[in-house]
Amino acid sequence: MKKSVYISLLFCICMLLSCRKLVTDQFPDKVPKPTINSIIQDGKRIQIHVSLSGKIDTIPLSNVENAIVQLFENGVFVEILQYFDNGFYNSTISAKQGKHYAFQVSIPNFETVRSEVYLPNSEFIRKIEHVNNAGRDADGLSCPALRITFTTNPNEQQYFELSIKIFLEGRESEWYNRPDETYPVELLNISDPVILGEGFPIPVFSNRMIRDTVYTMYLEYTTGSSSSINGSPMQMTLYPLIIELRSISESYYHYLRSFYLYNRESWIGEIYPPHSLFSNVEGGYGIVGAFSRHTFDTIFPKR
Picture: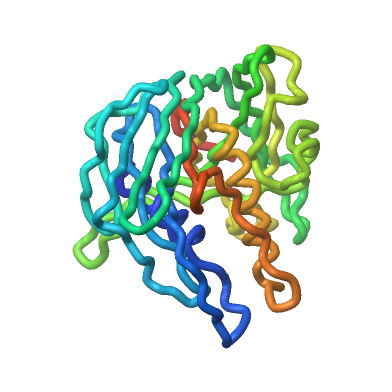
């Protein structure tokens, strides 16, 4: 399941970085450029997607099947990645924390493109406290909150993403079969100084404002649903949560922030062009990012 989630994440990034929102019915010719996308995870086999950029209405992606993809680790050549399917190339090695990785991709009749990334060492979640009744949402319902305590290294520039997902356990019956599902929570009433300092209502942040080796972040959230029991006042429904602290590369930090702006602004794209997605590919488009992670035990809030 984790492998399929990773492939889906990478495919979504490929789609976003290879096309743009429809804003006109006239599409001028555009010289295609190589586009490479890879999100490297600690302990996972390294994979990269190779395609060509196209006009704004180019669907599906122009996958490249004949690229030569060279992989380097800490500046030393490792191997040429093997083509798999649908533009994906696979490595035979698994990524390791604290290593620098680089791609050099050659496509016939195009300039060689390059990108590199550092896979950070992971930090750890020390403790999680769930607060059932914290602030209020827009409808006046009491919303829950989390106090998440994790380690940091103030002597290094670090970047993080907190992945907080609701877990819905699958059910099987004679008539119905629903697999396990997860989906991210939405933050509310942001008051944590680190998140406020970032200027974005998403749990993606640096340690720029953190001065100690341990920090406790306070986040209110909504589950998006409510219920009433035996005529009692409506309350927000609580679900099990899977919480993961990701130590992310600087490139992935900038990409996630640009992705938020892209989603927020693209709906007014007919007036203002959507915010461009961050790219760290030399000679082409795309994102090469990396993260290591520490997943806390699933928590089960109870009223």
